[in-house]
Image 1 (cartoon, rainbow, N blue to C red):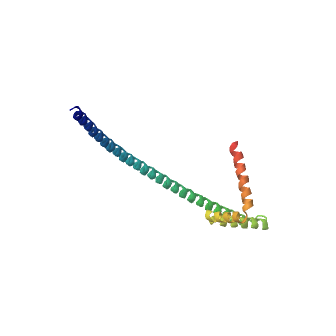
Image 2: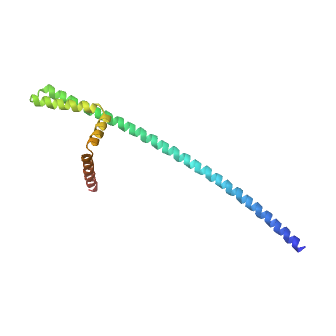
Length: 149
């Protein structure tokens, strides 16, 4: 009789251990599901925030680009007006005319916009890579010295 009682106790213990293992498995599975949901939610929020930041930066860049373009256009128009004023005042004959022509040329160049200026700068650097590299290094050195002060 002792062996059948021990067998029942062992069997009951085995059943209880099995139920406990099943419950632990369900709890772990539920915790994993909740963890996946939380991670997914965090990823969605992070993605939304990154998208909003990117859109804001894009708008700010577009606004800055438009403002810079308008400013360069205005400077070009102002230079052209100065050239016309010099030409109209008949300052020192030929010298005034040459200065006025230079102002007109510069004004026309700037009125075409920053894109054109950037293209010309890129072409200049491609035609003269070593002097451009030396200029960039010199500017970097001067900026580094100025920022230390």
